[in-house]
Length: 372
Image 1 (cartoon, rainbow, N blue to C red):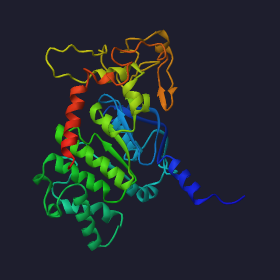
Image 2 (image 1 turned 60 degrees about the vertical axis):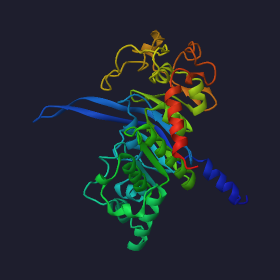
Image 3 (image 1 turned 180 degrees about the vertical axis):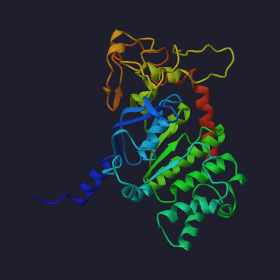
Image 4 (image 1 turned 135 degrees about the vertical axis):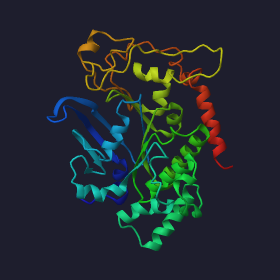
């Protein structure tokens, strides 16, 4: 048998996911007692989460605060050790990798943190902050690193002379640009963006989202984009995964999820965006009760305590992610028979009266932020 053609090898390599997560689990022990400490329970922060990210793709992970989004991002990077499951990056298993193996992989896996004020060392200059990861991984000579710092600052829209300044001399948006430049310093392939624009105002959010998209095209990056702002997610994502209480409840490509959300929780999220126009009637899906404790999650479907369509089966049997169309999976026993909420069934109409204003403001800011 002849060896495969180089073009076929390249096609197969590009088809393989850059990141493959299967059955990811993280339980944090809850201890009681000071002298004789004992474990009295487990916080089930992430429970059997699976997804893939292709090369050059952006997968958005959305959900309420405390649902396990950021924990999932940190597990992917092995900043915390998983309780179980598999995390494969370009065929390499990260979940069970040794410290030495992880050190060699770190340069390919980077993170952009949420808070641009807390994520930069105030005692280091911007040049030192950008040089540090290159020093750790032994990249280049001193002169090459200095040149790399100048290039990085220009790539993210800052000036080379900014390398001599300290973080307190920059605005929030400029600091986040420094955080992006730091993530790019070691030429990674995958970046976890942990709510990178949530601390910024709308105009700066648009600039940062434009920058992330431009960098993705320029360097072929893959993103795991963790967020709760569905207007931002609509612009930057290729696919969207919805998380509730440690589990994925729906995952689909962006057009399918926004035009036809199938899980009751996803429908509620899309209806929850505030409408600032006075006098206009809301079409919001109100969920009963509070998010249950991750230490004592409900039996069966974890969403059944707040779901307006819950039935007895939901209380007894945990739903699995099932196919609901090409690339669309939903964890709901009855999604086929659930009535579509008003304004959801007709294509793009979920935008009307729900997050149209927020989306329009963000789109306008993005257009204004792009030169020309």
